[in-house]
Length: 212
Picture (tube, rainbow, N blue to C red):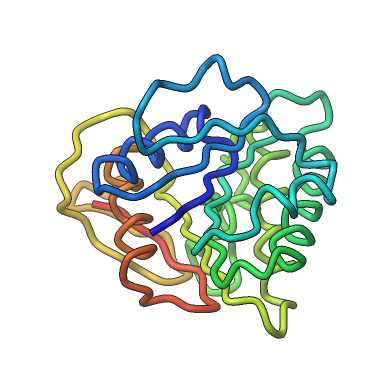
């Protein structure tokens, strides 16, 4: 496939880029700083600004699908920066007529009890609240879309560098816990789950999650 990855040099985006290239896809990496990208015969580096909808729309046109690994972690007001940027991306994807849109979500909007989301629990770390609330808003925006074929993948609570095992469980809107009561997934296996979905759509117009 011809895949556009927004934020392909980031914490998650770089692993998505590696996984997509390993699988033989043609990838356009849409990033602010193209000097951070590796050199690869199947990789096209694209300097992008997500706030420029007209330019972003043109850059996305012609791809089979878009994966957004956009993050607001570098901003002062993480929540507003992320929500504004994601809205521009959403508008551009629709305008580009790319048939599918996959999104890196957050764990904060997963439920730990009926009606209780991770981000609303007292123990949720304050430093991650802005990005978690932003990711929740992105999910809400997607759920209002009447025509776009979207999928959002939420990681487990702990998304850390590790092994690419290809062995994990998938879930829906509830936080997944392992046998030790921990919620975790490696960034490498998160990328496997996302590219599996890219290649074989199982969660059209849904959020799903991945964990051990």
